[in-house]
Image (cartoon, rainbow, N blue to C red):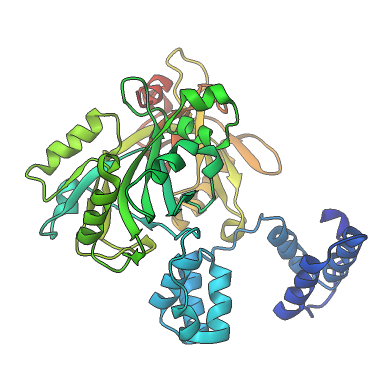
Length: 443
């Protein structure tokens, strides 16, 4: 793509439809000589673009464009542009699994076209997600008969069975059936003819405790027989979206849960409805090596994405005080700001802080502006992308835990790290140590 960049146009003439037409022709160009023809099409397109448009198109086509249009914003935009209810667009996206397909249907056929989308065996449904809760008490408050289940640190799976045909999908709707043969065999043996189940899968140690998350995920790319045998996956299902010809997404969770117990039996995730002691369930989950609990409203349907208080996750909060080692220049709406932080834990032996991860999450516009002003004062070196700092600033980081890693010198990496605040009241000698981070490794 960069080789195709020529002198940019002086004035802007390209329209969205112009670009769409060229990209459509590029996509349709196949066969002998197609590579040369595609290069010609793209070269001509770029020659008609201004410098800013060339930069935009280059990053768009190479997957490097960060322009801030979140899916939720796009759903509202589609609804507005096609004059259909946003809830109907959201539901169609859940069934189709693709925002562009849904947008095209809304534009061409409006509400009637969107209503045509439904659950199809063998086509994964966008998953329903949980929102975080500050505490167990907050999560159960206001729900008459809450369902409280284990929150496991596994890989989200969705399984579809139609007769003897079984498909297994990840949270991102990627099919992994060939990497999870034991899951497919298990579902094929359930007492039904067709079913769609939502759940988690994880690899367990010999004593039944969960292995680290990355070991479970490694199974989905493994072709080594010895590793497959060593890391058998155990499923824990928590929802049933279809059973023997009947779609269940629109019925209350309490009814879906009844169907789930009928078909999945011992493979249902541990949990109770209206438990006498929800705190004891949370403690039991943590003692077993899991993350916490899920609290669910039994009267809610299944809906893709985070749906308010329908599903809430309760996990103990972990925070660390770490040293800022460097920051990377931002992209998209953060262009011109120092954004992505390199984080280090204190070396208890007095050496340089040991890098344990990066994050840009949690940074407000005010913090971005402050970092961009402050960090150059601490610079001890830089390149095109990164400003390296003297290790003088301490930042409080919230995280979900830690995992082993070969990427960083300490052999450990942060999971889902996000900035809480800077700690001007602390100096680097008071930061948490690499041993504190290692102590967070599960198991």
